Image (tube, rainbow, N blue to C red; front, top):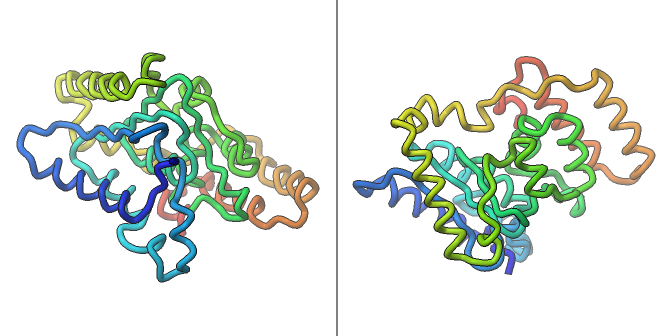
Length: 251
């Protein structure tokens, strides 16, 4: 019901990308969730098998996102419902993100006592800034489509009909893709696509110098027994370090 990112779904995304790159005439890849929502996180049932189970089997979510980022075709995430956890991390690996007006976004892993594990701690702050990134990930709160548009998490809103009409969702996403392709080819050169990747954006800046110290103190008071919020702040601090690259932040 939530389009969990099971091993089968992960494999399906990678195989679809490979197929698109191998077919003549394909110029863009549009990702759309089937049913009532875009993927709203991992398939929790897969974690029951431990480290040797399907949750950690190839392709992992990081490998899926790597395939999206390495695509020589523009990838467009067309989001409806809720893009949560690994679902949002998948979308952040695409070149473009669009959404329906009622869509919601978030990285609520803190409620499970863990951190976002597929680059969310490094990509989200590059778009929304340090303060908002820390707030969203340590509280688990969801962001509306209007806030996502304002902060750059998405590039455009689809027509309201797309919230409840699968055909309108697909049609709107295809129209957006055609608009990207219509820009005289400039938007789809390798250089332009690489520049659109969130992981290639510079570290976030403009935040208060004491934001990490203040955040740690507030979280220690609010949730003294919880480790995950503090580790999220550590991860965002690594993201925001001057000169830091995405790879260094993930280390």
